[in-house]
Image 1 (cartoon, rainbow, N blue to C red):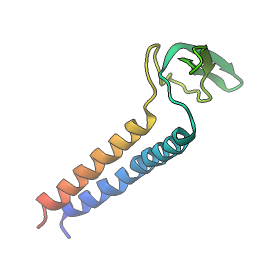
Image 2 (cartoon, rainbow, N blue to C red):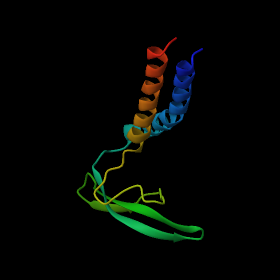
Image 3 (cartoon, one colour):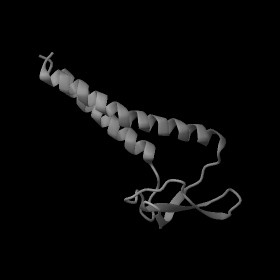
Length: 116
């Protein structure tokens, strides 16, 4: 087996992790959307939370219900550094799925084009 082929396999193996995370996030979101009503939500504030072991940032998302009520809720996810900015929409499954897909394609290209 050539070095390029082995490198291609390694890149594919590394790409499986973020790809799997993206697929898992996508499937969870899809299952939720089957029973939920959809609406658009926007990050309107990022709240700094002081924790025992440091600090973290929590996005606050605002959306409008089917009855026209405006609701603003903090996300259950917190991070440091902040993952979201005011005005941003949440696309975790696309991010991880995209990274995994790119690594998979790169690994396949390395394996196919440099097969010796």
